[in-house]
Amino acid sequence: MGRKQVDPVVQGRVLELLNLKSSEIKIISQVRKDNIKILRATICRIKKRKDISGNNKKKSNRKRWYVLNNRKIHSLKEMTASINPPTQKNIAKRLKCSQHTIWYHIHNTLKLPTRKKGYVHWLTGKQILKRKQMSLKLYRLLNKSKWTKIITSKKTWFYIDNCNG
Image (cartoon, rainbow, N blue to C red; front, side, top):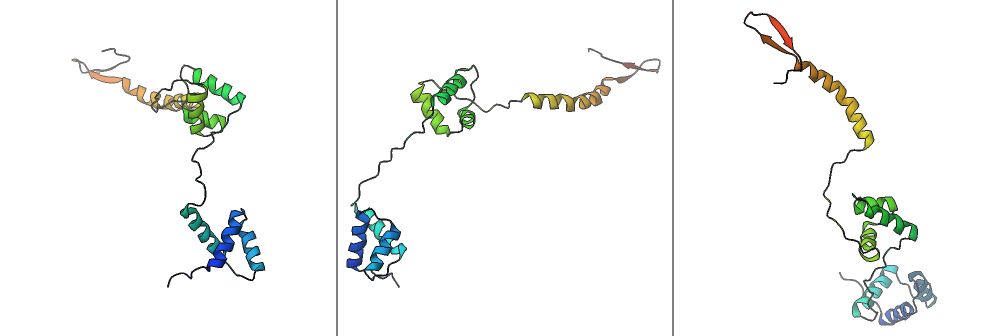
């Protein structure tokens, strides 16, 4: 079974209140004063039909760009002026805004050229220190293998250390 059709009188009253920019709850309370019961879903359905019919103005898709204050724009300028600038994603994390905002301000506000940066495995100082400490044990373990056993014609054993050849 299909939905019940909304009475044209009720629909007209709801549209009238929608044109006055009343909220759905206010519309329900106004219609109840007229002894008419209506659901919020019905009001939403009437609102959608109104939108589809083209009675309302089209909303512009133009979005407002996130505005950075002068301090953040100055720090953005300093970050991008360096020899090896961070990626837009990293800059956005530091300035606590979206990556698209950073892109917009680099291109339009600062009018700077951009570079295509590939992902590079970059170690921090802490990571380098950890690697040195951990690899020292491994180096000592592998260093023992530099000693080699060689058999001479006299069949005596001796060891060669730091052999360059």
